[in-house]
Structure formats: C-alpha cells, structure tokens
Image (cartoon, rainbow, N blue to C red):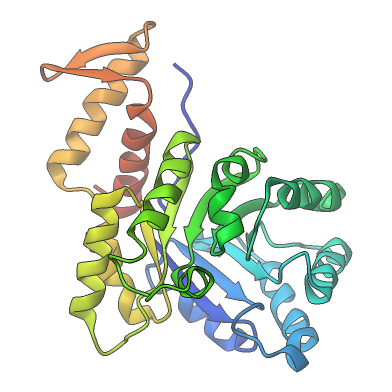
Length: 284
C-alpha cells in the first residue's frame, strides 16, 4: 500500500489582502489553512495595492505548518489576468491558490497552462459558487491533479439560484459538491458563518456540514477557529480505529479486509489518513 498524501483541512481563516498586519496572527490562530483574500475582500480600485501587499507575505518561511494560500480574482476578469501575471513575476509565489467563481473544467485547464515554470507547483482550492460551477462540478473536480479541495460558496450560489441563503434551500447544491469531492478524493470546506455574535449557529451549521460529508469549514474571525476545529476533529476512539485500519491496509495486498468485524474497502483509507493527519496536528 502506498500512502495517500493528505493533511488536516478542518478550518480555513480568511485575511483581507489589504491587512497584511493580520497575517501573523492568523497563522497563530490554530487554523489549518490561512487564505489571504484579494478578491471579495478588496474593492476594485485597490486591487493593485492588495497584490503588492499580499504577495510578499509568502516569501519567507513555511507558515509553521499552516497551509497558506492566496484567493485570486476570476480568470475571466481583467483583475484575474493581472493576478496571474503578478504570480508569474513573483520570485516566491504562494504555495496554493483559492480559485474563485470557477464555472468549467476548461478554466482549470487554462490555469494549468498559464501557471507553469516557477508557478508549476502551485496547488488549487476551487470555489463552487455559481450555477455553472454546480452544473459542471464533477468535471471541475477531476480537471487537474493540482486540485486539493473544493469550497462551497453559499452567498454567491444562493444569488445565482435565486434562492434564500439557508441550509434547507441550498441542501441540493451542497450535496452535489459533496458528491464531487468524495468521488474525486478531495477535501471539501463549507462557507464561513458570517454572524460573529452567534457561535451556537456556527456550531450547528458546522455539525450539519460534517454530517453531510464536508471535511472542514471556513471562518472570517480567529474566534471561530476553536469551534470549527472541535467539530471537525476526530475523537480518541476514531483516531485509534483509523490507526488499526491504516496498519491493516499496510499489511494487506488485496485492498479489501475486515477490521473490528467490519468490511473495509480502499476508499475508506483516505478518510483514515485524514483522521491521522489531524491526530498528528493535535499531538494525539
């Protein structure tokens, strides 16, 4: 058995591209991912300023084990093209990008073609937040081996669908994205909870997302990170079971085995490796 590369992606904290002073605090917040946002968080007249402030943040260090990325403007816009040119000119491009408003697999292929050379190692985290993206989510999810996760964008999705932004009205859309992520072995993060005064609502929605098949949830404030991490962290019993299953797969050459009386097949392995990656981060 060869190990599947995985890492914990329970929580993602957004940092506005115009506030580089918040980057260090975000890296120390306990979030598994920190994303500097130069798309939705930056008004059009200040995009160039945001690029100039944000790209240098990725030049030094490894983030102390925190996954770092930059949320760029859609490639279908002039600002998105400027983002790509800035990335290609950068001596130290970010290790990963969050790709906004992706509507087709062809857009991912274009990123692949443009982000070559020193940018060829950049990983992708793709937001599904439009009716086009929803219609093409299966093709998008398998469009590149540089994709590590999908994200569900409820705000833009609800507007595109002409639907209320509620759990019930967006359940079909969320479920479709869950299916695509699971089918293609990708992590999947849910939209941030926007009401900072309602931590109970955050926990309820995070638990509903976890039950549906999401592997994590985004956040807009460091105070939300402990709640999200708790919801998406495995119990001691789940960690021990994952260790038994991974050990059994390493000793097996069939891809099919029985652990604790339960038939276990190879697709379960990625979930178990994710559980152990979280356990390592927690020091358990």
